Length: 268
Image (cartoon, rainbow, N blue to C red; front, side, top):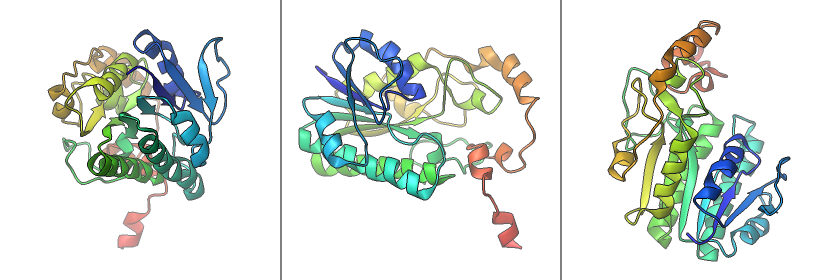
């Protein structure tokens, strides 16, 4: 990749990638709907609203690969999710296609499958079970990636990111934790591996308590360095301070499936 575009530069993951990716890819264009507060001299930044196709086309010009971290990163209203994560995601794929971009790495989410029980281990080929409007938008992004890969030859990698950060914050996150350096490794596979056509990987480190079969990522050479079990004691201590969640504590998506949940009442 001679030049890559990374969207969502002002978000939590984007800010960390701005620290880690330049050592690997020296020519990066960063973009977001707002300028990062800590933008450094010399950083190539272009402001863009993902909901505006013309602005997305502008940031895609002249790039070989895209890491699409942009969009609304938590649950929101349908209007918010539609604009940022569905229309915006469609615009990104279409602009990439029109610009002749070779590869896209799409930041999907564990919330695309958040209604699976924690007692079940799932791979990437299961039926999607989104736990929120946000999760639905990530399912949409994966489907769009498959469409543009199969119909137009764009090479697409979707990363169902778990919990990104330096340490797992509670017991649930012991199963889904993703060390920042491991995300970098997954991004590199998506941008560089010669056999990528359309793939889905789980964005998770080496977590002994995982609910996910991430063998598809390992097949492409993924070797995570992070080990969630190294932080079990502090995760359990943090968990002890949290209130019980009768719904979320059973499901992989945690508080996302329990938010607005009323299925039990309707079943009576």
